Length: 309
Image (cartoon, rainbow, N blue to C red; front, side, top):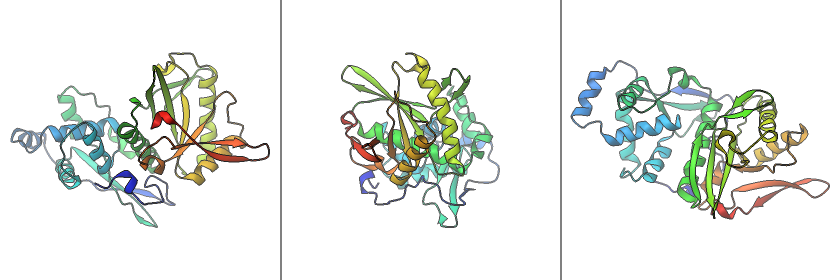
């Protein structure tokens, strides 16, 4: 498998493209549970298949490369990407999982996105593994799927490269107390720095239609959450840092401009920014950025975050 730092693309695979749609790339037809059980009994579907299914259930949308990296992290012997792809095809043919790809006027995307199917939910439930998947989950629009994929890639990068990494939390539920609404960032991650625990929440931003207005609305919830925060809220021991995950460096400046112009910046909270491709670097201690003023204009500074080394 090509290592992250060997990837030469200058455009994130999880960036939005004009007129992009998702296309079903799974299997049609009917497969009975008896047929699947027979394949389990003779070993054609084994524990590795079940681990793949558990990962897709947990992370909701994954590329085959992300699945490979996760299996490696959890010490499963997958051999190589081709071997994994054969396992995924077996799960697809038996309608245990399904698959999509993205297409636009620029052509088809270079990867496939794997997600749950009904038979997969039945199999996990049979092992008393919680699966909240519903068929409507696969109807999510492109931008929501890409936000999840970008967030999952960030988690995987931190798991593999950051020594202080402790735990991740998918879609932690936060409450804007005064407004009376709950909201969920894609993820938050805990780090152990010396004897202290540091938590970072990640707001994934994509350039989908109307994203600027939606970001301003979202920041009202964040502002409420931060201003009313007390230790223990949403499981955070202390107030979490907020990082915006953007498509590219130009997008970071666009996000900052939206926040600044709409007075969505918080004086008591320093916001940081990163991009999808920054997570491909060999080390992540220089993957964060901030915007600082010299009195007349703002400029972007690379932040030295040694605890991410």
